[in-house]
Image 1 (cartoon, rainbow over the protein chains, first blue to last red):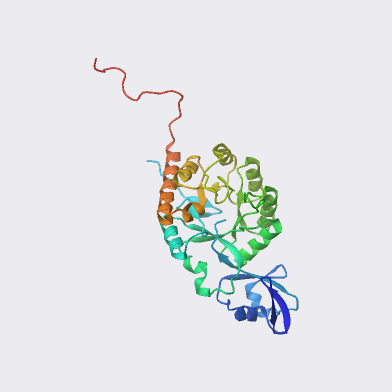
Image 2: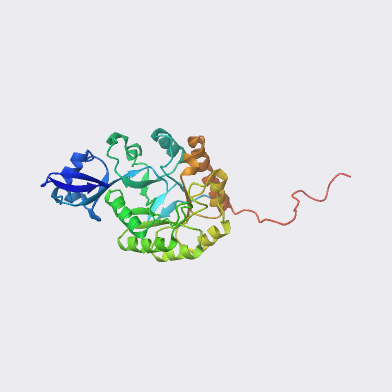
Length: 68
Length: 259
């Protein structure tokens, strides 16, 4: 297992996992989201091909209510 | 008879000159009903970390019909160029469009924009292919710099976000409209219908509001009031108001009165 940070919280994930696996594990694979890994956008076409690495910092966002 | 045309921003046209937000509503049902009553076609949304405890079905976006509404993500809550740029990139990656309502806030209490950061972020995002609509103050020079930086509209505030104080500096808003070629959308501080009408009477192209509707006692009724106010103000502007006079000018004949 390796440790990555997702939205400010540390998580243990499988060593061979890819971003797509992480989204499924988080239960958000069907939502309109965007992923930033170590301050770079991960293109959605690459979710299945981007392996997670020890110490990765993810920000996963969605659209929420907010006028300003 | 004088008639209004469409609001066109970055090659996209809208019939409604009123844009609305999605924050502060009691619940999603009220939000949907208010949006409907407002006649708006553009709806702003914020970008935040996914709430991993909430079920997908509750996601706010599920309640907005993207066939009828154009979603405009914003960078609400961003206090630096870096945060705003990262947020804009994430918003674009979420896959709806390359439009972004850019906010770079300079002060927590007033939520007034950091105009220096705003201009810088606008330049950067324009270079990355975004269509940038910056939330700015009522400073003509800043508005001009935003236009030069490649923004597709300028959005001067009427008064601070959520304050409902209406237009505090109408002259400056008019100066901005006269000086830039871009669409001018008054954004922030509109509290009630007369504020919206007053803004449109200055000649601006549209209005964006959130709290004015969402925090009204009856948001659906207020949304309808705002729709009418924006239309009334626009028509009054196009109709060309009478000049103000210092003294009275009688409207009835001065001869033929009984004695």
